Image 1: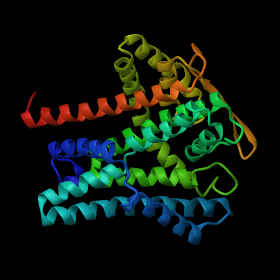
Image 2: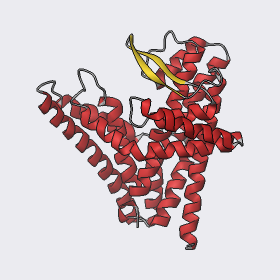
Image 3: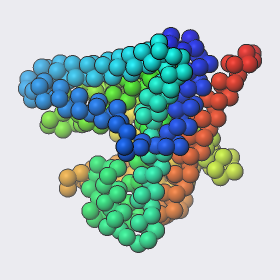
Image 4: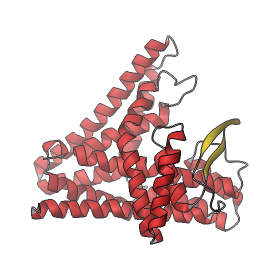
Length: 332
């Protein structure tokens, strides 16, 4: 059994595959309320009433409280919704589980974000491209040229193959909508308070560490899947070998224990070099280089990265469908 025992393994596999397909087909409709928005509001509310700057031990304890309450309540809320729906009718439970899981996945949204930067770049509208890049990265974008805008976009799409696609699927397989929501809560915490700065160094430490731990295995699996996606897109095993070599060589150089794996795999697959100097609030931050510069960065690499993302998602969806069929037929 899987999905906190609400559904069987076979049902869970079919539903997670369906959630991936739903996200690809419709994304996040603007008119529908998004549950992750509620998670963000909860985080800000708890932060307002618990945040302290000093002493650091007290700040850390309140940060643990924020982290634990957000993750547990998010998972419990998703579980309760699905359980109530399933008690009314099995198919209503299936629908609720699929929809909730789909809201934690951002396959289509990630691809669209990359294309929103590419289109103005292709039209020579740098200011527009800078604005859209600023929506998806934390670095300063006002003075970036085409190459740096491309790098920022490729790095973000590559990194988020884990956060936005593989990890939600991974935890949905372990715990249905509850598992996916617990993961999404942890990831949202990291994006809101998981910074190493004066305000969040201690208060956000638990959130940052939890996100690192949850993404540890998916990040490494993502490098393998991206290598397979590179072979599929390029119809060549050479791209896959280069992606794997790049991940082995460069991933450990990234300041994040996880982000280097998808970034270096994409860099290797495309034959480009990522990393370099970023600016945050005017302050320079040097990131280790990922990949070998077999060709210069060009806006077309955004399209190729989005293509890798779709191949990555397609392999994941196909694998889920094959596994569901395998279990259904009782093979092996």
